[in-house]
Image (tube, rainbow, N blue to C red):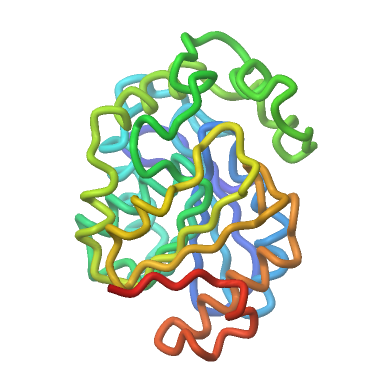
Length: 262
């Protein structure tokens, strides 16, 4: 286990591979661990990092920092201490939102952004998550029978501070997520599981409001964890996105992409 101290509190992270840095940010329901299959795949070409937000996984429980602003600050401190200047960010759910606001605040430090299963509005978050009132093992309570079971998620579920889920979701509900996304001037990829019961897939009305730099991809049979449900396709999509950020027509699975151009 690797860890650093940020603002007098422990932050757990893991890193695999050598090369250009690549940063993975986790969701409300899990920790760094479910990124392992993708990190292993990317480690042949990249130095892949994944950290646990405050209150998740093996990072310290610091109640005063359970907000989007708190996690954006944590990410900035982490990158500074690890010597990471500019990096592509892959964020899932909560991680996608944190990555988006970090890119808004620090556009010179984010090269590309992939947002996976990330809500575009507060109303896109299922009531099972937005209405969670706290307690132990929030992933088990919220997921219930709605999702397939994954060991990478289940292992970490009991470590989560329920208040971290409650407070961070509340801070999201007060944000204009779509407006923040519209203001980004960098390549953005939205990746969604078509069958996700936790985060609603953005509709045509939302996608039409996005600018030329935002692309979308729907995994037709996936739910909330496309990186675990369709691992090979997810990894290929990510690798193509990273390599072809300035040449979208060269992407091998371009026929499966839904390109949004205004």
